[in-house]
Image 1 (cartoon, rainbow, N blue to C red):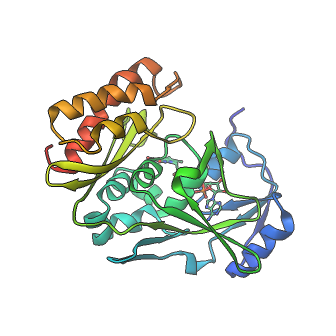
Image 2 (image 1 turned 45 degrees about the vertical axis):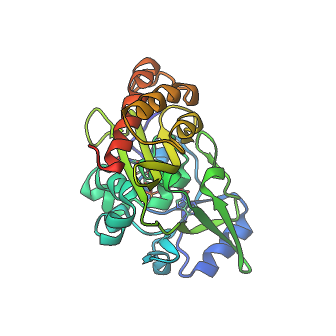
Length: 290
Ligand SMILES: Cc1cc2nc3c(=O)[nH]c(=O)nc-3n(C[C@H](O)[C@H](O)[C@H](O)COP(=O)(O)OP(=O)(O)OC[C@H]3O[C@@H](n4cnc5c(N)ncnc54)[C@H](O)[C@@H]3O)c2cc1C
């Protein structure tokens, strides 16, 4: 049942990464991580029980955004959507991610919400999640004692709201691959009003050789219990000339990839009817046809 009042909880405020990892190791699942809090606090008001909440507010080292043309983009776990929007490198080299951050909610939200929090909420509607799923990348997890594990973005979402993160792990950084000269990407979403979560979102990333697509990663949200790739549609475009005929076939193939449901934001029928159109528009936008 929804309430506007938070129940009592203990707030833990580690001053270093080591301290945060020790807390997670000691408490083994009894502590919930709070980053921007724009998902977690809403969930807690709606009844999600978190007796101990560990805030990352004092971990300034996790707030970084670094681009290197050889190794790619490193996004610290405390990096906000606003920082992405302000980055010329993200805008130029990762348009899908920049566009997903640019349309995200409101300026207040973008100043607080983090990209990594968007991924770890495990929502099929996450806008940055769609972009990252299309761009590919890994999420770096840290554990006490210096342990590190990289989770491929394709393996991150297990089921609705559930990720591959273990209880004692803290996500410290998201890594996106370096784009090459033929990389083209774009993001699109459909909402009732801009402040709403998506009825449907889509992100695409294509490696182009002239007008032929060498490889493609397509991701779509709100059409399955988790954010998903679109393998049937990707297979149509890979190795093909990206023209109207290919895009029409890819738009049709999306129907094999998705399994939308009715919920408070839209109906399964509507989502099915717009999925192919939005995929086509995203590819056109990425390739500069739109
Ligand atoms: C009014 C409003 C509008 C919104 N609009 C949008 C929108 O347009 N698009 C969209 O996609 N979302 C939207 N959201 C949802 C939310 O803002 C995003 O999902 C946001 O990116 C979450 O980031 P956060 O830092 O606030 O995460 P938090 O709420 O702090 O955490 C989210 C989850 O991730 C876990 N977590 C966070 N960081 C770590 C870490 N480093 N290691 C381990 N676990 C971690 C938390 O434990 C929690 O389970 C909206 C929310 C609100 C309230």
